[in-house]
Length: 136
Length: 136
Image 1: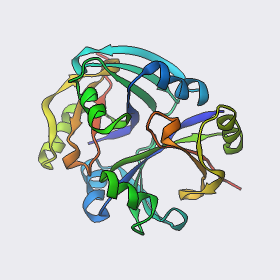
Image 2 (image 1 turned 180 degrees about the horizontal axis):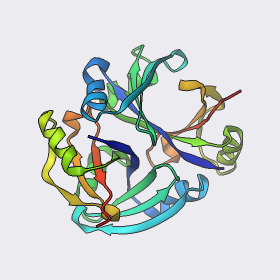
Image 3 (image 1 turned 90 degrees about the horizontal axis):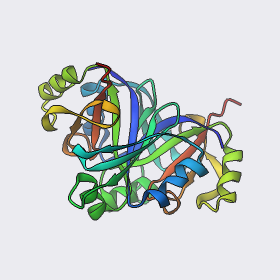
Image 4 (image 1 turned 90 degrees about the vertical axis):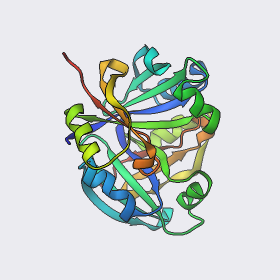
């Protein structure tokens, strides 16, 4: 599989109005966009460093993946997303290597990327998202 | 302060021989270097995606920051490092904004960067490292 780079780091937050100013005002990173990704039960508030993004993730429902993560571990880094050239080739390679993925087929994530998540059990405790830019 | 981009993501690992192949072989990311950073009590095994690095962090001593992190939370994402233009300007801005930093002055981290860590209490639960490339 061909990794293009770190696309973003996903950070679970409890309160955007309290947590966003650290990234936007103190660090001075430009907000790229705010998006409702209902399929994943989150509002994503995206800051672009110019080389990789910071995605603040606010749960919309208590039982969303981010809601459960915060319940268990508190706010903090939730996942790392790597941009890949082809999500289908990547999934094929993961399956060949017996890497556990979450769901069988890609879904549409923030910014229209085609995404798949690798289970932390297969990645040394790290939740890894792979994402292919979807320009079609 | 001027953020240049995501420099790396630091990942606490228990066993490099078991955890590194996911990044190097399955994802196919090139190893950049392996370095003994004794000041932080870690071996860093660095993989460069071309746009941000993955730094695997192996504790050298049980009471190192990474040793304690693994003891408490298990292996996984430990911190995010942002490259800054000037570490001194950044520290000044952090202090003006009453952001809690760990230590008062920069130390030398992996690859010779001048680095400072921001306490997760001041960054929504995220351990943030700021790093200035040190070419002098």
